[in-house]
Amino acid sequence: MKITVLGCGALGQLWLTALYRQGHEAQGWLRVPSPWCSVNLQETDGSVFNELLTANDPEFLASSDLLLVTLKAWQVSTAVKNLASKLPADCPILLVHNGMGILEELRGVKQPLLMGLTTQAARRDGNLIIHVANGTTHIGPANLLAQAHSTLADTLHVALPDVAWHNDLGAASWKKLAVNCVINPLTAIYDCPNGELRDYPQEVEQICHEAAAVMAREGHHSSPEDLLAYTWQIIDSTANNISSMLQDVRAQRQTEIDYISGYLLKRARAHGITVPENARLYEQIKRKENTYERISAGLSRPWE
Ligand SMILES: NC(=O)C1=CN([C@@H]2O[C@H](COP(=O)(O)OP(=O)(O)OC[C@H]3O[C@@H](n4cnc5c(N)ncnc54)[C@H](OP(=O)(O)O)[C@@H]3O)[C@@H](O)[C@H]2O)C=CC1
Ligand SMILES: CC(C)(CO)C(=O)C(=O)O
Image 1 (cartoon, rainbow, N blue to C red):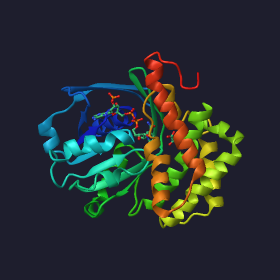
Image 2: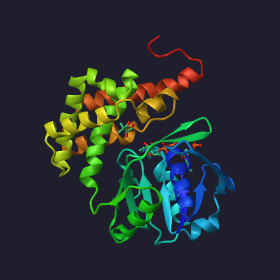
Image 3: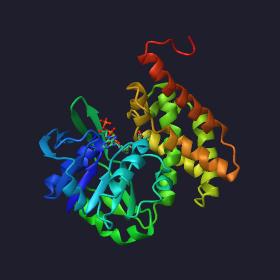
């Protein structure tokens, strides 16, 4: 297949490596246009893949069989809308990111849209991307046209296992959102690995209760107890992880809070439900983001 990967960071380079190795024609698409994209990935077994791959070639884009989008949630809609008119009308677009709310922003896009949830783990260390752990990527249709693309899961599975097809990813997306509403802001506020959230059981429980109420109104019933048990399971299985939001805060990068707690708040408002704990965490993370500019401009912190 001919595949363009939009966003050549940690997940993007992981997929570019896997697709190239599998014999697919793969190009990267960079924010700042360049004819080459440097892929430098350390695999889970310690081996290193280092190649210069084609990038930002408009002819390649115009004949692509798949656009794989591996951007941060807040980067997705502008970047995809910019490329959509240059892609074949029947080229599927697969979005792999944390958070929800992008599909609403991409309503005008004509191509088949798919979404993906992944437990693959990769992180940047200087110029090297480290594939930290293998995982599963669950993909499914996000519009009617995409329902015909289930065979994509088989192709992607061969390149970077496991990949599984689901006709409806709605409930799984909400469950993941709820877990991210707990782990991401709390770890960013307490500056701790995921496992240390064991010290904050009341906050974890309240966030889960609020998320379960919104999920039920969205048609995805999950008892607060089940959601809480699932969240503790993820906290334990990722105990040593530094969450993506804490990594962003430490590096003073924009976080994905608007698409995590922010999306939950938006849906809660639409249903007339109050979610005070999630609202408090959302505000706290937004305040943290607002201090970045002040810090880098050498201004005092608001609390000083
Ligand atoms: N890494 C992981 O293990 C996992 C990540 N995820 C999710 O997947 C998504 C991607 O994560 P990850 O790969 O870690 O993120 P990264 O920040 O590593 O990668 C995003 C890349 O996109 C580039 N980019 C930004 N804007 C544009 C643009 N307009 N056009 C082209 N490229 C652009 C960035 O470059 P620049 O810095 O130059 O702007 C960066 O290289 C996130 O939502 C994340 O939460 C989910 C599960 C696991
Ligand atoms: C599941 C979790 C919380 C793992 O760290 C994650 O998705 C993230 O860090 O963004």
